[in-house]
Amino acid sequence: MAWQDTLNARGWKVPFIGKSLFQIGKDLRPKIDRVIMENSLIPDAAVQDKAPFPWIAKLEEKWEDIRDEAVRIRAEEIPSLGDISFDHGRIAADRRWRAFFLKGYGYTMESNARRAPITSALLEQVPGLVTANFSVLEAGGHIPRHWGMTKGMLTWHLALKSPKEREKCRMTLEEGDAVHTLHWDDGESFLFDDMFNHEVWNETDEDRYILLIQVKRPCRWRGNLLQNLFLKGVRHSRFVQDIRKAIEDEGARLAK
Image (cartoon, rainbow, N blue to C red; front, side, top):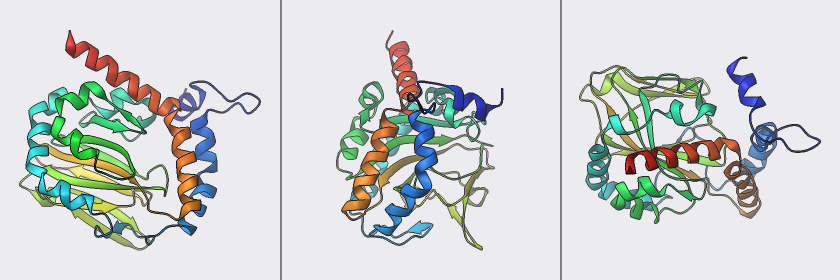
């Protein structure tokens, strides 16, 4: 069975509909995204202005403390995203992409949070936070071209440990006929809409560490209401529950 067919066959299905909450959300996504963008308080742009998000400057000031916690955990102890999330199977086939989740869809990953107390405390100051993880792309790693889940979220990258050959470690972000090429520089960050196609390469012999945060797009009340309903559905989907269980199991294993 192909990966997409297996994905659709997994988990509890809504009676009389025969689809999971995750599948239903994906089917409704175009309509949901349209309402969200009609109510968005910021423009529809691939690369976003950081100024409307004052929490960003606060985390940038503490980037060295965040970096020290991420590096102390080390890439070898951070699981490959593809190993903890079947749903990311296509884009996380390269096991050199690793993710150490701290928060996600209203859940705190307690065992992980205890290993990064400074970062975890800072995350509590981020309004509208949806997910947060230390993301490591190991030397030679590649994340294929893809787009995200919904226009209701924005993605922020804070560079913690960047390869010296910065031109060989990059993300391309497509916006119409334009292609933005973004690089990571220690202590600096950028905010983007991951619903624009993007692709990532690390063609160096060093690992790249970032703090990756997803936050809700600022919207008027109608868009905000729809965001909350959509994210509540995702929170209870197998997509999130599988990741949560895998992280809990790993935490229990390490505690032995």
